[in-house]
Every structure is written in structure tokens, then in C-alpha cells.
Length: 322
Ligand code: SF4
Image (cartoon, rainbow, N blue to C red):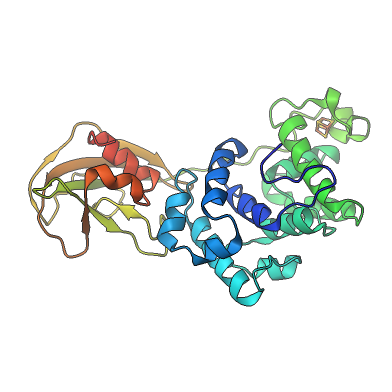
């Protein structure tokens, strides 16, 4: 059983549901599960999360990516403690007003933790419903008919179980490539199954064309071996996380020399990283630097205590620092 789920006859812990639903927004269950354990061990209640520093939260979020979620969750915990007496709100509207909680997450928390009669529609549920009713439309035109179908399933009867059962059905039975229709409780009423369309619906989304950007990262060391880092702006991609200084990310694949330090030399090879909307290729130069107005130095053997995104870790590994 997933660690945030309640056993038969038990009520789910709203705090654990909140944390798990935010983690699951853009990350698969297999990745979330071990990190969920570590996160709730470190912050066992919403008060502990609200009292932590943002750096502690970002550090505990490492490996999950999309760090904006961690910052939103931290701010939401603060609001829950300040404005709701430490109780997670139990209705969709108030939940949606919290930082980082969108329409889907609000409905998932309301249904799973509070048995509210709403059906949250994630990718798995969207696929189940599209197949169930054999909705043959482009991916961009699915939202309205799926929402209408989900509303028909809303009921006061075991709303929490219904929401979770739909999610499970999509994850384990109505799988994207190879649906196990023979074991599906809806096989007899599924229109796609009757029409032989279960593997062709829903129609696949158009492929995303990600622009490719390039940059040069500068790994500068002080004479005592400490590495120069800088913090990214709070807003935008990898907001507030720590990185190696680098040239701006741009469409030109040219090596850029730093305007600080000395003795910089280019390492062979490059580091590639794919974000949701861009592909990035970085070259790495190493050199020396004693001071920097916008950065800070950190000893290399203490890097595990920093909130470093995967890209920065890849760059450090590329330079032989793991
Ligand atoms: S019968 Fe097959 S396609 Fe239809 S809902 Fe069940 S698993 Fe999905």
C-alpha cells in the first residue's frame, strides 16, 4: 500500500495527502515513494514544515525536481498554520487558494482526505474516462467532455475510495500501452473495448518541440579548494536553487570565457539536461577564483548539504566531483 494511503476503514491523514499530491504533480509514484518517507520523517506535521527554512525544504525535496512545488508547499504550510489553525482546509475552493495548489490537487485532497464528492482528473483518470466513453478527439479538445463525464461520477457514496480507485485503475489496469481489459471491472461497459479502440484512445498528444539552448558553466575553486556557487533568482526556472556560475542560456553554441578568476580551461565533453520546455547543453570550464561579488564558496565535501538541482550535480560530476 502506498505510504500516504489509509487502510480499510481508516481516514487518510490530510497532511500526508497534501504532501503526496504535491510531490505526485509531476513525478512518478516510484520516485516519490522513498522521498515521501524522508520528507515526512523530517517534517512530520504541517507545523514542522511551516517552521522550517525554505533551504531545509528545498534540500529535503532533492531528487524530485520541479522545485517550485517545494516552495509552494512550504508557503501553503505557512498559510495553513497562520490562517487555518494548522488544519488543512477541507473544501476545494479554500484549498485552491493555497500557494501551489491547483484545481486537480485541490480536488484530490478534498476527495481523498475529506471524502468530498469530487472526482479529480489526472492523466490516469483522463485515460480511463476517454476509453470508457470512447472519446475520439485530439488531446487538446479532451478537457470539456472528460470534465462532464467526471461530474457524472461525483457522488457522496465513498468519494475518497472512488477517487483512489479511478487513479489505481488507470495506473495498474487501464495502462497507456497495454491495458489489461480482461481484469478490468468496467470491461463490459467500456465502449473502447467494445469497438476495439482500447489501445488507440485517447489520441496521443502532439510531440513537444523543445528549443535547444547552450551555455558555459564555470567551476571556480579558491586556493583552499572551496567551490564558487551562486543562488538563482527566486522566480523562474530552478528558482532559488544553487548553481555554478554560467553564461546566459542562449541559442548559440559558443564557449564563453568568465569575467572573473584566472586560468580557466575547457573540459572535454558536455552536459545535457532536458527541462519541460527546453533542452540545454553546457560546456564546463574550470579555473581559480579568490573572491566574487555575487557568489559564495563552499567546501566540495559539504555539497550534499546544499539544495543543488540535478543539473548542478551533473556539472559537478562532469568535473570529477561527485
Ligand atoms: S476495459 Fe480496458 S480500455 Fe476499458 S476502462 Fe477497462 S482497462 Fe481501460
